[in-house]
Length: 83
Ligand SMILES: [Zn+2]
Image (cartoon, rainbow, N blue to C red; front, side, top):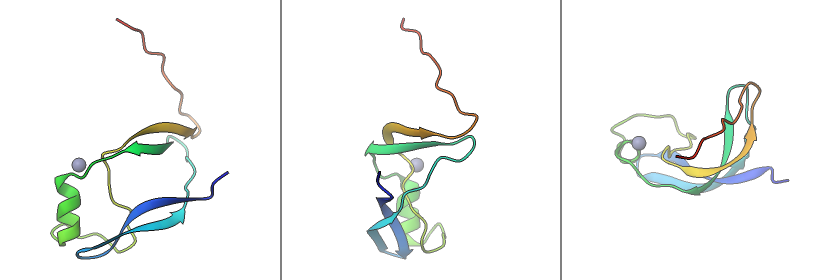
């Protein structure tokens, strides 16, 4: 079982790096996804340019598509009926 993952980490203005970081686990009410595709949105660009201040160390990117790897307490998958 993997204990680390790759992540885009903000280190400073115009300094984003692909780092190896500890893999989180799903807490209550959360789901852990294995990201299979993602994109960059305007908020990410504002962060990189320093126009939207964040603390160094923040993992950026919030437009993912992925596969559920783990569900936290209180989270259940819903059956989806087909049309
Ligand atoms: Zn966005």
